[in-house]
Image 1 (spheres, one colour):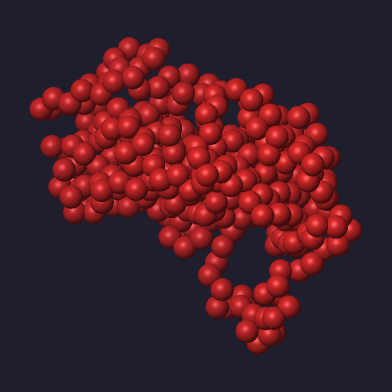
Image 2 (tube, helix red, strand yellow):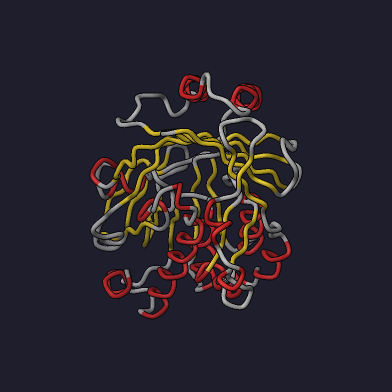
Length: 338
């Protein structure tokens, strides 16, 4: 069948990128998002390789480059509060072995919010949005996918694409339980963003003891605070209860040195914007029938890998290319490309 009406679940980088490419191909695109507005917040992200190349084709490359962050001065912090040591490999790397601007792959670090804003600008007036909604059921017939929502009236679409992250609702509805595809990597992490500098701008410091680490990263007048820790078993907590998440972090890091007490106090004051386990998503197929997954919903490498945005943008471009090549014939496109 030829798909013309598409619904995309998730208004983050994967969803907005997919919406751009499909709207460009002439599809009628609707994006449904559980939040009341496009997803914002989060740490700075790196774009490289095919993902950065896709921003050229989108027409936003120069804007991405212009809003990119400057190089970061990174230091490792020893146990004693006053002692800082460079990464061991830095002292061992000879000058003629260091990568140069000519042989290093191009990479841009950009604030997540700024990339989301640029992607929204690229699809302005081309895409419909359903905010404060999520998909509650999918039913496939010979000629359509029938979709119900938490708030909006039921509708029929030719294609459904889940771009709704590590804990994808579309994946659960159509492919099965998360536990069937999620591989726990025995670590948890929290992110807090403080709207002031806690160290010199464009610098980052990493403090760690066995099984635990703290990273602070200062840029554009604010500081990211990231706590992460090892856990043999998965934790039982309410993902909606940020107070409980703060308590977990406080218990894990109580009594540690360096600036730990100060940074825990900052977390208590500013709150946690992200807390989750490190997981990989491994699926035998990212498509079934006329439903597809893109980004972390399909192939999360792990939040620790730092390539989620790049993989999401690559996947968005790939699915659009497949549909364009096979003129919207969904089953053929999915079998050939994904």
